[in-house]
Length: 387
Ligand code: SAH
Image: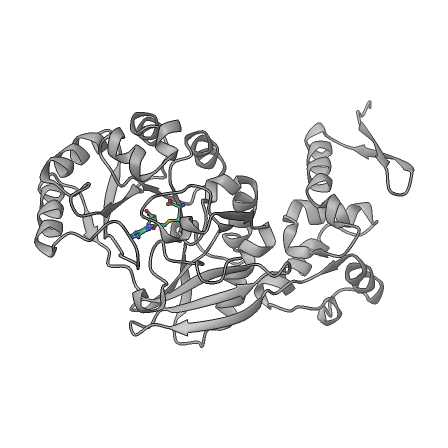
């Protein structure tokens, strides 16, 4: 029988070596090369093993002559038993543990500070390897915890109402740094409640760090080889990077939230510069064809800002705009901060706005951000410590 093999020739500049590799299928060859490319720059020093997807770890093992099923064992130690040393992995042989320790380490960012709000939410300041900081917020709910995580250090979107944006963009987080927020903070919890919900609504624009966010999602939601958060309970919130939405819908089944915040392009251009590139019609067209799972809806976040986007006409326009989409609406009264040029509307205005949406059969809830006293509310993260 004739068997075809794909041959990949790799040249290692550092060691001046040429290596021939044989793969059974083109897909496997591509995966191997993609895996190699994504962590090759780090191989000169040790790599955080959380940077590797399961497939990349399998390929690494195969390349070192080890059985692929070992990946499952290793990942179980890292994500389920939460160990930080290969030495403890008692079901792996001594040589294998030595080899793993030689190439990898299990990184845990330092928890530099925690602050607890009067409403019970806890803000974690995490120090990354390069000295940069990110923040994550743990929010206690009735019978579970929700964790709000960051996807970037700083943010490049420049939304006018957002304090985080004022600090500018510093860098993307790696897969490992995104995953670490969930892994490390869940380790801090007592057993009274479980961390079941994760929202990517902290610092940064997740879709501007697309590849790392998708790799991290895969591990966070993997119940066999990852952290086991249900994909129904993980939400990605975006300012609306339209081309990336198509990929996200194809590659993941997590929940989608869109920060809409205005019902006409003039107002949205002023509030969110991204709208000049991807105006409301383009954004909502992409939402209308977004491949939603059965019984799911897209959440539209709408910050209510006094005199800017809080009129009854806005509410009616919002109803019309969302008609083609399976949608629900979160109304977020603007969180004011020192020096902010906007204000929060009166409570009666907020209620009237909500009433219009409800009368038109939309689920609309008013979300008062938690953690305001510790600067942990929406749009307030990272400002004091990010650089
Ligand atoms: N870049 C992503 C996620 C981070 S912002 C996004 O745009 O969705 C998370 C949420 O906080 C967004 O819905 C944003 O509109 C909201 N937000 C930012 N600043 C705020 C403020 N000052 N008051 C209320 N909500 C704010």
